[in-house]
Amino acid sequence: MSRWKPDARERLERAALDLFAEQGFAQTTVPQIAERAGLTTRTFFRHFADKREVLFAYEEYLPERVAKLTDFDASDLDPIAFIETGLVEAAETVFADQFDRLRAIRAVIATDPGLKERELRKFADLATLLTDALARNGCPRADAELTAHLATTVLRLSLTHWLEQETPERSLPELIRETLSRLRSLTRD
Amino acid sequence: MSRWKPDARERLERAALDLFAEQGFAQTTVPQIAERAGLTTRTFFRHFADKREVLFAYEEYLPERVAKLTDFDASDLDPIAFIETGLVEAAETVFADQFDRLRAIRAVIATDPGLKERELRKFADLATLLTDALARNGCPRADAELTAHLATTVLRLSLTHWLEQETPERSLPELIRETLSRLRSLTRD
Image 1 (cartoon, chains in turn red, orange):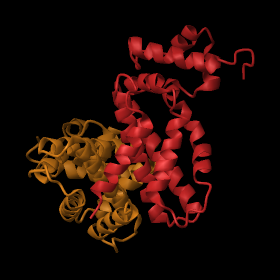
Image 2 (cartoon, chains in turn cyan, red; image 1 turned 90 degrees about the vertical axis):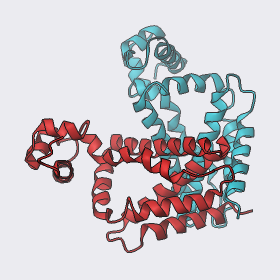
Image 3 (tube, chains in turn green, orange; image 1 turned 180 degrees about the vertical axis):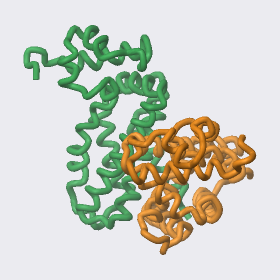
Image 4 (tube, helix red, strand yellow; image 1 turned 30 degrees about the horizontal axis):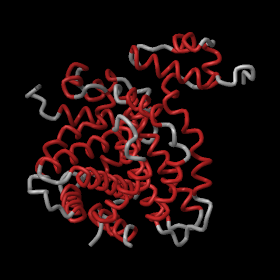
């Protein structure tokens, strides 16, 4: 994969996000993205299935991350502690320093109902991955499923609040902990 | 709207679901649906924007139902009680006697990633409607948002479990109460 251009993927992403912002997602073509990046469309298609997938490319790392996160005996799971640990770790690694990039991606997604649907699928797929991984490691399936859906809900809402800010004044881990503590208090007897 | 054929909408839906099941969603065209129903494509388009919307038509009633459900002072909301009351009422009215129809719709949706994304948007839109309605009636916005997302998560999981059954042995209200009690126990300190 184009060893002489190790930054091809990043350049394509940058070019795509710039063009989506300048002229709109629907109006942007793959040849335009490749041209802006100074690369060929063939190179584009070595990195991304289509222009939409530029916005969702990091999904390919999810299975590996979920596997790591769930590599323990889950038969006696503390769901809230698990969600907090997992999400805060993700916030401090995957999402750290990605504020501007994720904000640009989010702005594009907000312009197109089809992209919003695609993003919802991303979170639904993550919930399925997490459910299966927890169940495989001994967590009763119904508990695994609900824990996974709570985790993705908390992640989605916290990410939204984080990226609604113009600057990352409140950090993502802080917003995750806040959402989790709200969850506990709302579901208390 | 074709007064002389008051059942046009139901006939079109029935014809569409039958054709989707027989030959696949992608392979089915609007003229085929209209022909099977003994109606014109023009009549089809008076009732549905496109063939996909046959599967999601009942969404148009959501705003009205959400407005009714949230017509109270929500400044001192008990989220779990609110979710239980609202969902069980919906289960006993909107979803009652719809088991076979919803199961047929679900089977079609499962065959197509685009339809799955569309369904996810349905639940996301419902969460937004609920958030806004609760906030308008005095619930702090962050609480309204989390309550609305918990409600749609519980509804989605309970519906899935209900429709996974070949016959509705376990009722939807029963499954909703079970999911809610699991939610409480998982988030308990």
